[in-house]
Image 1 (cartoon, helix red, strand yellow):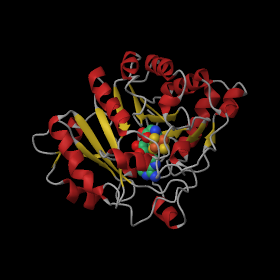
Image 2 (cartoon, helix red, strand yellow):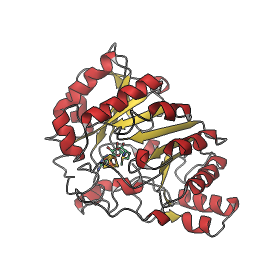
Image 3 (cartoon, rainbow, N blue to C red):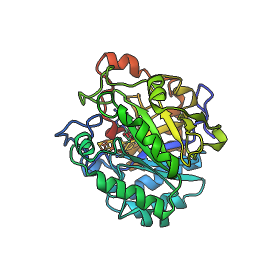
Image 4 (spheres, rainbow, N blue to C red):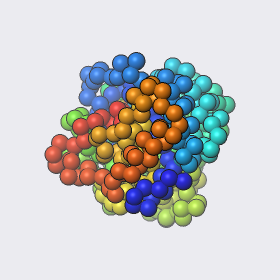
Length: 328
Ligand code: SAM
Ligand code: SF4
């Protein structure tokens, strides 16, 4: 298994299959954003499968397909099926905004998908339309129900928490876990891209989220739902689902980092906060073989930083890349 210079085992690839999205979430993209990569710059299905197989051959065991919105990529079900069949990968998962999931959950399950994370920042339809700028809550919720019905497990709900917007809904999300097998994950707001949304005042730190969540008991790592990664996982006593916190800004998130990110255009970023990246598309299109591609991945890993510098960056305007460009 690959190990970085800080002794962390890195076996988790987060792959953006498109930078495009049918939403414009206020913390992720500006309202009129249209500066998406031209289609010829985006990796083809064949190129994506080839690169993922290089990672799998190096000991990467887990793949998360993300974006942009991965379900807007044509042929996504077939692509997921190819990823699921790659030898060496033990876990293939998906992050989605849920809007197109109701019609695809069954097909994705049959294609080998086992679990899913759905972004759902609010349970209020008007607020949902506001934060996503054009999304319908009913569509995303239908995606949640279809995922449960299709047997995807665990089904996690990702909630980016922003003061003045949805921190008051934290107890409602925790309540959902009491009777439904849903695993809610409260995500601390991060300064990604010039969206104009991030501010220190809007960021709700871990201690405050914990207070708002009410009584919770810690869940041992071996009892946490699959793919807990750097999330701190808790449970409301007696609840079916769990409650997690992903707090990249507040606390020692980087100690447990096990991941790298590959963009839809083939740039490999060893850290969410990395801006340079290592280009895999150029060498791939120039005919690079497995050893050359593996050496490029190993080189990127060798410069994986010990920790991100997002707090310092926040003071200076944030990371210049939008989350949908890096792959969330
Ligand atoms: N479109 C899919 C979705 O929304 O789940 C996948 C891509 S999205 C970029 C992946 C995750 O990044 C989502 O959970 C989203 O809420 C999160 N995200 C985007 N911008 C963020 C920010 N500025 N701070 C924290 N999380 C962010
Ligand atoms: Fe699209 Fe996901 Fe970004 Fe929202 S968070 S704009 S759904 S990529």
